[in-house]
Image 1: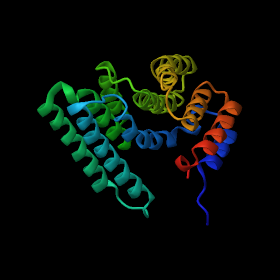
Image 2: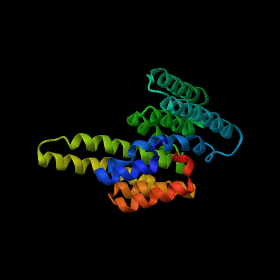
Image 3: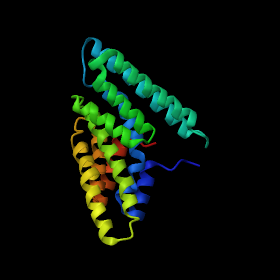
Image 4: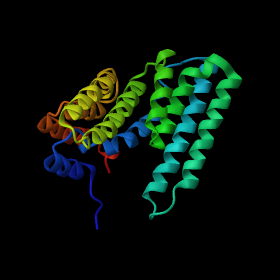
Length: 231
């Protein structure tokens, strides 16, 4: 049987649930696919480009390992996750050894690793550290947007289970300010990605703003222009 496509899954969930959580499950994969690209776009000379290339290869290795593991028949992913943890540890060691020249792309690569592990709190910390160090590429902005979006989904789902209506509403308001708004802000700063990905980002923004028809339209456009991302 032919695998269910991303576009079909998106349409089904939007129609069924009408909630921001509808497409966030695929976002971390796309962030990782962008991970290697982002490391080549900031530093352009000497040792810095060498370091960026080194970390880009590490990100690609982590993404490839986990993607293959998730596509394989159902099995325990502990060994695959252990490998990613080891790669993250190696990047941290490289930063300690080489100093400030490695920090921006290094913390970005670490953040991408944590995205692959679905550890979005750690991803947020590392990606923001890279951002604050000046590593403000479109890819890092995108990764931060996805990370805050995933945290928003998690916190929102927990808040929805609060029984007291007043407490629930207060919690949701706080969560939107703390997680949804930064997600939107960073996604809007990711300008510079290829056109198909810009359409996808536009779809994410529309979803976070609960504009579901626009989100679906953007998703279809992104699939047509960057179909290889959604197979």
